[in-house]
Image 1 (tube, rainbow, N blue to C red):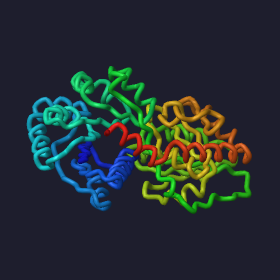
Image 2: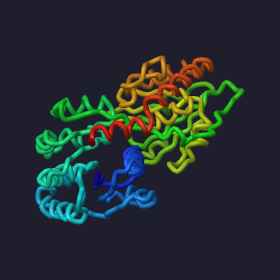
Image 3: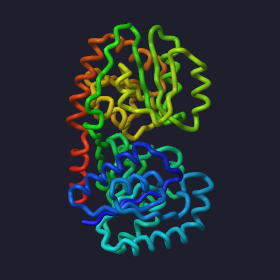
Length: 360
């Protein structure tokens, strides 16, 4: 079986979507599938080559996800469609295409279906205004009836159904993690009363990192480490304002060392966060986690049993949850339950098994 993966993003950055796509391509290739990646995502092009996956570097223009690009798509789409059709000619024998970006979902889907190629859409991105108010959404919904859409959480699946997707044409497959990635990690045994809190997220409004800073700022004996980059980096640094117990590290930070240094991991998203891969990774090494109710992963977790789930956008809720986890015994119990759950439900093997089911 020959499977083509495509991604033509507005900008290329290493995030959960890229990590999961690479893991999926590798996993399917190891199981005997012929995998090709094509697109303009420089991150995935580089990583695919490094991992022995065939690539086709193809640029078709920006996707219709901003006001101007959605408007100009009206006259750009003909040339974009021609480039995508030539792509199919360059890669003969494709049985299925897994599409990750809006451009090819709108333009390549009809071309592929006409050739008898099965089409799958994977939805890693949040369902924000860029999609809900997009003038091309009606066309996208019409095309969705002829493909299988794969959301990365039940929460995302429900949101797409609310936008008009048929329940018969969309499934949820949770993201999977490499449980061996952090093998040998040694959690710190701190003898002080300080609670070491960590988060790793893109520095943008929807991720809610500013809310977590406010929740920690005036708390006694609480330390915060933030790992991330993003357009709000300057405002986040200003908010930290040389606070002695809060720091911002860049995105290339070694995650094994980061996980070894914290007692609690928090994902404080204030808007729809499709899954929350780093939460599953933290859980897999026994770190207790706090997530908001708009995180996709929260839909699989049980509050008070294997995670703490709080209302999104609430500083008091985050502060209360953090203070609850000052108790070492509470942290140990939550961390152990979370680790067992993550290692049972969020593995790469389970994710790849589900994809093989839908591909067959």
